[in-house]
Length: 356
Image 1 (cartoon, rainbow, N blue to C red):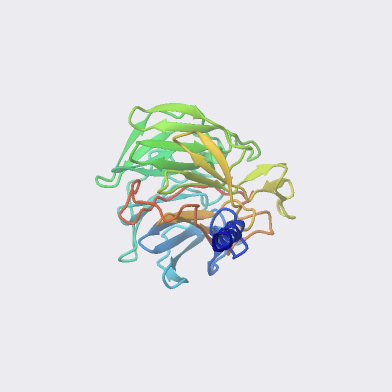
Image 2: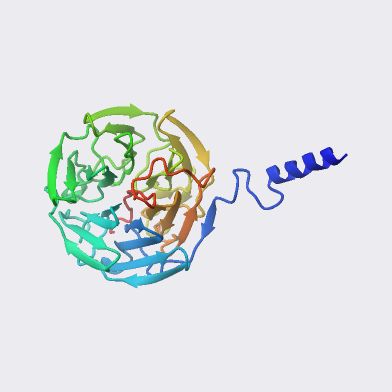
């Protein structure tokens, strides 16, 4: 009889009757909203703090930088980035944040590179990108930072790959990518020297995107196709965590189905709350617990194996101030794949509002 009771108790726990989801703990948790609502921002994490950098709302480009202290659960102002922008990318590298490209006016691509020192709350200009780009994919790998694809002026997809060395403040060009796109999602596995590029916009109209997934071996500069996305997407995110898995979430599709239609500002767009777990080792996809709201053009940062999702856009009925954290199944993870001592790797996204 006692054994039967224990079995019943275990069954109740597994079924979620004590407040647990079928995937483990409730994967998503809402945090204090970011004070400055925006989309097309960049985000990155250092230590126990997540930074929301620039972006756009219905006013001119935002230069605001706000920091979320995880321990306090609060947002605080930080020194503004010297040049406000949208559709830029950011990555954490050795305790500092590097911001690449973007656009002031939604047309011309920027070559600007700026470095932020969170410890001293100081910005400084660094060597500009040889090729100005909007919405590039940026990934830290070993001692360097890869800036891949993106768009040139007027949103024509670029195949350019350039590598930045923060130690010497210099650039090196690599062989072009075979499938140019902008607003794609990217994640890297530094221990294997590989970068994964998911989806992205494939022309200047903002209306055509791809399901392509490509693996880039930075050691051999070769590309290999992988199992495709479930639908064409751009302006979404990909986050590599210490379990060895990549979480791909959100995004939008022109005249898509199966998501939430855009509002009066973007009636032809469909936005998604999907979260998919991708295994680079097995080249397989598995659906995970959906985002709290469908949206694109949000910022993401990874700290301690969790994914922080900040702000975003979904056609006028979006979540411009929303801040949520996603705890992947199986957390906490070992430090096996860590890039930094705090196990952080920024992810890349684009953004959507048309001009926007």
